[in-house]
Length: 370
Image 1 (cartoon, helix red, strand yellow):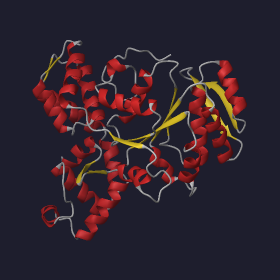
Image 2 (cartoon, one colour; image 1 turned 90 degrees about the horizontal axis):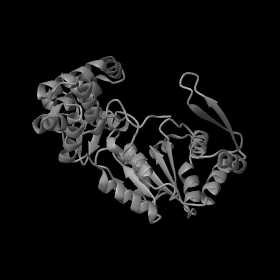
Image 3 (cartoon, one colour; image 1 turned 120 degrees about the vertical axis):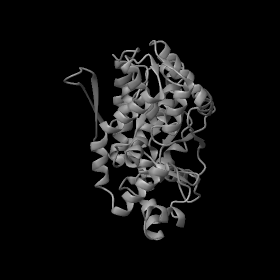
C-alpha cells in the first residue's frame, strides 16, 4: 500500500494528497461543476504543467459514493486494441471488491483479465487481453459503465494519441458511443494543443463542439511561493520571495521543473535558499540529463539544431522566421526555418503558445543555451 507521507514534499511524479498539491482551486471547482452538471470537458495544457495532477486531485476530492472515477493514460497506446485494453484495465482497477470484479468480468465477455503480483514489489497487477473485436469490446465497456448504479467520470489523458492509431475511423466510433451515454461523463485531456483543439473545434471532426474547453495555465507565483515556503519552513529551511521569483522566472513557471529543483533543494537541506543555490540545483539537473540531450541532438538536422539553439538563447521568440532573427543566428533560408519550426512543434521540441515559441523541455533549453 502506498504511503500518504512522502519523504520529500516536492513531488515530481504521482499524486499523494491535497497537502502536496499546490493551488488549482478554481480549476478543480470548474471541472467538478462541469462533470456534476453532465458536461464533458476538454482539458488542455503543455506537458508537465500539472493537468494529470489536477485530474487526480479532482478525483481524490470527489466523495466516496458520489461517482466512480476512472483515469486512463493513453500516451503509450498505439491502436484501438490498446485503447480498449487500457480502458478495461482501468475499470477493473477501480473495482473495490471481489464481487464487483466478478460482475465486471461477466459483463465484459470479450476481455480476459489476469491477476498477478509484481515479482519485486509484490504490488498486485492486472493484465488484460482482448479476445473479441475492438468495437464489440468497446460496446460492452460503455454499456457496463452506463448501467452503473452511480455516475462514472472517465479521464482520457493524452487523448490526442488516438490520432496516431492506424484505424482511420477511431474518432467516429468513439463519438457514436459517447454521444448516447447519460451516466458517463468524460475529461479529454491533451498536451498537443493544435491537435486536440482541432478535434473539438473543427466542424469536419466527429467530436465537434461536444465538450466544454478548459485550458490550464501556470500556477500564480504568489500561491506557488506560499506552497513552497511552508514546506521548506517545516524542514527548517528559509526560501525568500526573491529567490523563488528567480526560480519561477528561470523555468517559465513550469510546474514539473520547479518541483524538480525544489525537490533537490529540500534534499540538500540548506538553511537559507539563495539564488546561487537555485542556480546550482538547476545546473546539477541539467548536467544529469546531458547524455539524453546529446542523443536528442543526433535526431535533428543541422537547420533544426541551429534553430533550437537560437530559440534557447532568446528564451522566447515571437517570429522565428523573421529576417532579423534569421540574420542574427545565421539560420539560412526563411523557408527552411519555417519547415524546421513546423517539424519541431509537431514533435514537441518547440512549444508554441499564442504565437510565441520556446524550447518545450525547459532544462534542455538551458543546456542548449550554454
